[in-house]
Length: 132
Image (cartoon, rainbow, N blue to C red; front, side):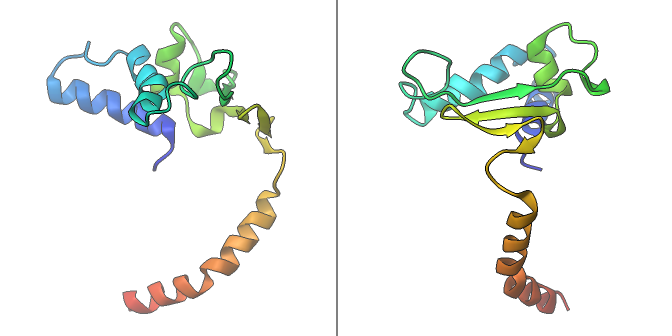
């Protein structure tokens, strides 16, 4: 899977295992690499990557009531080791709320799935024929 939360967890565990060092890449550092570090790598640190006046406001609100999010002793560790995509409650992109209460606000998921299914039809048939 390519969801960000899975990648956080894998990044941490792979590096700790490879380096044989449990202190390598603490959770706060992984979050920093995924936010301001990613913005810097893309040359966009003046526009994104941190919450500051004048920057684009892309935010994700994570609900913490689910069993996998309890207990929380360190919010960074909870994000890296416990959070899943299913814990995303709300999302704002450039200040616009696109997800609220785990529901899309500007798109219909069913309509998007139907459109994608129609577009994928010819490719699915070709892939199935190749597999045979």
